[in-house]
Figure 1 (cartoon, rainbow, N blue to C red):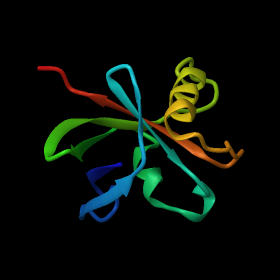
Figure 2: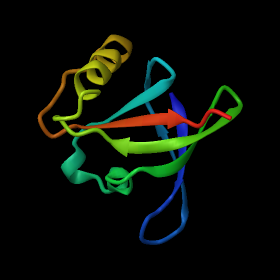
Figure 3: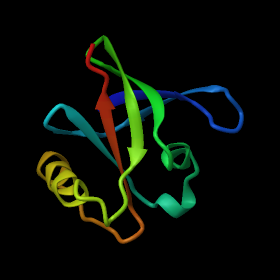
Length: 102
């Protein structure tokens, strides 16, 4: 589990959410279950900046929804499934967090 921090695209308010994640190389994969009944993930239809707090460390990156046609979709789902062992539902949304390297 980690804390995902971002600014709402419409409100501009800071948000901090606990989310389950899995590693996919240097990236984090987050799955939004029951996505049609949630709004927060829509902030990442277009890539947006995020901070991830995990084990007392904060990392900065960008987060985006990964659609089924994206080449990263299958490998990212596989990484999440190995880490979290969840049943994939057709309405789940897949988010990918890329960390800035400087």
